[in-house]
Length: 51
Image 1 (cartoon, rainbow, N blue to C red):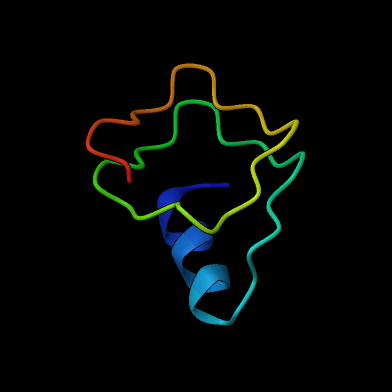
Image 2 (image 1 turned 90 degrees about the vertical axis):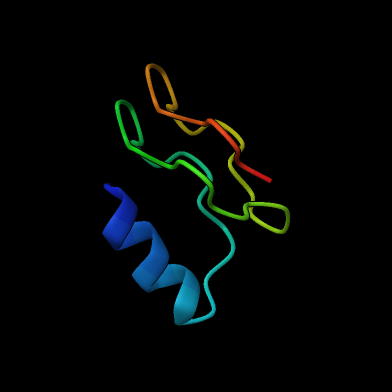
C-alpha cells in the first residue's frame, strides 16, 4: 500500500491498517494518531514528522 491508498482509505473512515504492507511508503507528515498499524510492515518507510 502506498501513501495515496492509505489516505484514501483513511478518508473513507478506515482506521485499522493492521498487517498491511507499507514498506518504503512515504508517510511524511501524516497524522496517524488514531490508526492501528499493529503487525504492519513499515520497514524503510519514511515516518518523518508523523504524528
